Length: 567
Image (cartoon, rainbow, N blue to C red):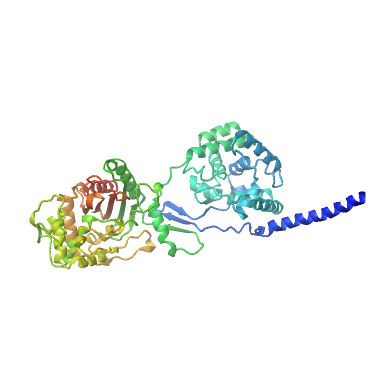
């Protein structure tokens, strides 16, 4: 019997060992090469600045200055060890005591309060593995944890963690996060700031100070309590630090503009290389445009069922975009109504009809008939439904006379000629080939329409909107300066005595054109003031009518408020 037991013990031991070897080989078949631990692979970052050099947006992965452990503020490693792995310097990479304690605390709390992973395990996962919750990944994590403990000292493992951990907002590593959230290097963070940063790894999105400052403060207080329990600081220090937890104001992020630039700048960037680009955005103009649009939609706009809007401001001489607001709120959605949406401009298209008439020899003093007209079964009428007879071109544009616009279109080449004129000034969308074009029935974008007004105010040069100096297209002469001056004069009459009197600013040269579509589904004002063009659109995404909103009401008022705010 004894011989039989010995024999089978040996057999089972051999086969058991072989099984263990096979299991190990199975889990190691696709194990990453640990030697590549420091060869980080990340998305290159793109940092956008406004025209003054202030950062307005970041894309990709942000990595700060790689620091040695002794270069970090001493509060940071102490905070991380206290809250993430208090026995870090005692265990061999796997902390069975810590795991048992975490299970007990979680069971008593009825929720996950403490994690069981050590810092070394977190480094293994960060460097080599995905977040998949599988047995295979956990086994691989165990192997890599033991490898790290064998090949690196505890200080080196902690240093790797501090430089590589993800902390939200695209920031990888404590130095990048310190700069993003506090504007300082990780060398100089305070105890309060260190507590906030050390609290982020568990849930970077939930504890992001920019998104949820209350949750970030509560988590930082937990970190401070853990530091007290770990004898890293005193209770008095913790209380003093808790009272000093503050966050800088969130920088204004012009999301629509930044996305527009990021999409258009790919050809300028070297593959795999971080880049910082200075844009044409004026932060003050952007803030004013966002604030004024939001206030209008929340106040008078709400009373008339105007739920959305868009604003574009650009330099009339060059096309440099100074501000761009693509909707009511970027947080509600990044869809950019200033660039992507196509809507009928109504009478805001009429300046191209008038320009075509000037190019055929007419002047602002020449007259056009305001009287009933029929084009087949179509009978265009004015909003007031009365007629003025023979009036000057200037007065007809100032009062936005529909019958005059149709007559001018039909007299000088028809819709094809007017469409060609609009295209020459920058309208790239396909336009209808019938007489309704005189009343702006072709769909266009706010930014292209605003830019197409530039030749009226810059001596006749077409501009292409741009947001980076590297993307500027030199202006092109498309109409004679004398015709541009006549158009500017007539558009000024629209503001001085016509449909856009709400846009007037005492002592300032203001010119522009209103536009309203059928049933007040769209309301526009494109205007010029102190060398800038400001384009305004108000409406609803689903095309629902607004209540008696015309281009000369809320859009013209919004133009006025933005223009005054950006003087």
